[in-house]
Structure formats: structure tokens, C-alpha cells
Image (cartoon, rainbow, N blue to C red; front, side, top):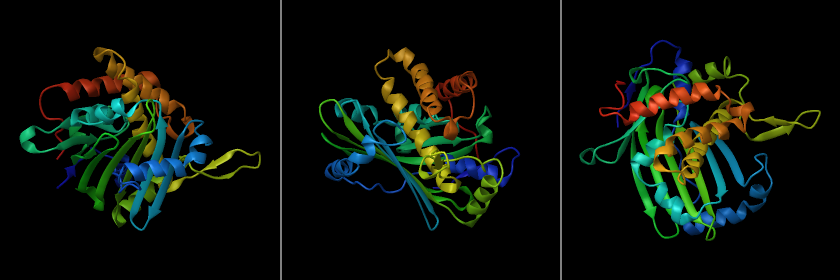
Amino acid sequence: MKFGARVAGGCRWQRVVLLWALAGMAPAHAIDAASLTTRHAALREQLASNQFNRPLYLESLETAGRLQGDIYTQIEQPFGEVAPALQGMDRWCDILILHLNVKGCRASSPQAGDTLSVSIGRKFDQPLGDAYGFEFLYRVVTASADYLRVVLSADEGPLGTSAYRVVLEVVPLDARRSFLHLSYAYAYGMTARLAMQGYLGTIGRNKVGFSVTGHTADGGPVYIAGTRGVIERNTMRYYLAIEAYLGALSAPAAQQAERRLNAWFDGVERYPAQLHEMERGEYLDMKRREIARQQAPGPTATAK
């Protein structure tokens, strides 16, 4: 796959931050229902007691040239509802558009293959022509009575980034609960590394993630910063989009989009130190316009 894009103005490090916003996910720890169920059992203590005050566990990893974030969470919805809702390219576009940096998403026509055209931009309104255009291959790898695995992947990206990958897994826990795993990772080269260092040395210097690395003198948490903070923030943003999407399914169809937007913003505001970027009204106005544009006939983006 070839990728191209342009952004009007801005420094190279600003451009790279946008790429990191939708870097794909790495291969997940679990690869079948039994493995994911075993992982749930292994995380029982972390799910019961954590900084999120709910059954959710987040971890991140940085190896040579690759970043990965993983969220494991227990959700109060049955597998029979969750699994069908998380299949289908149009449904994934409804999920992805909730993120601040996603400016548009459109599923391919049946003749073009199973791909999602996703436009990634800045945290404010901008023309799609100023966004990065990505083509993600969409695959439902497994959809059985007790296990769902969906993968989004792209081989290449700008500035030496590659191996974009999103993995979603779900298993049932009982008649009313499910266990969900979201994995998010990608590979990067020297150009992207230098650009990210520029970002972290300027406007990103005070931003943090969720992993607790220590405590202050008065006992408060010290959160991870740097590149792992970046991947943790975006892993959480995408998980909150999935959570908002699932939570809105009970609303009448005409009300679901608005319900999703407000639920995503509510979710972000639970963690202001990590995720607060704008006020509710600004977010809602921007996303309403982007959703209307996404639903209009014609191509999603003009990014080259």
C-alpha cells in the first residue's frame, strides 16, 4: 500500500504527532478464545484494583523501532450484542470518527476490497485535503460463538513509519459480561523518531500517559511521559470510542451519533490530566460537521 498526504504549514514534528494518533496495533497477546480467557484470569488482580477505578488494565511497550499499547477491560454487555456490533466497516468508521484527530472515514465499495479510507488531521476543523490519507485493510479474522478477532492493517506510512496494525478481540465471560482487548502499535524509523523528539521537547513536554512510574512526596502518582505516554493516550482515546459506540446502541438509531459524541467526551474528561484538549461545545460542533461530511456522497478525502 502506498500512502501520501499533505498538511498546510506546520513543522515536521507536528506532522508526526498526527501519524502517531492512528498508528496501527501490534499482534495481540491472545490469539484465540482460550488464550484471551486465560489472560482475563491472569489480570484479575489488576482489573479489580487500578488507577481507573473500573475493571480496565492498560500497558505499553517500546522496543527497538516499535511502540505498542494494549487495553484489557471487562464490559457489562453480553458477547451476543458486542461481537456483531464490532463487525462491519461502516461501524468502524462510526467508531473512529469520534477521535479528535480523525477527520473522515469511508468504507470501500465491494469492488475495491475491504479497506477503510481514513483521514488523520489536527485537533481542530480543517479541510480533508490538509489531512493524511490512510488505506487500512479490514479483516474479520475470527467470528465464532465465543471469540471475535478484527484486524486493521497498513504496510506503510509517511516519514518512515510502517506495519500499522489494530487488533480487537472479545470473548464472553458470562451471560451478561464480555472481556475486550484492544491493541495498538506501529514501527517507526529515524525520521519519525527525530520528529517526535521535537514534539516532546516543546508542546508535548508536559503531557503524560496512564502508567504510574512512582509517587510524589505527598503520595500522588507520577505518570509515564515521553513516547509511551503518547501511545497510551491514543490507545485510551480509541478504546473510549469503542465504549461510546457500544453504549449508544440502546438509543434509537436517529439519536445514536449524538449519544456517541457526548459519551466519548464524557469518557475523555474522566482523565483530564491525560486527555483534555478542548471544551464540549467545540468538540461537538467540529464532530457534527465531520460526521455530516463523512455521510455525504463522494470521496472521503482529497489528501494526496
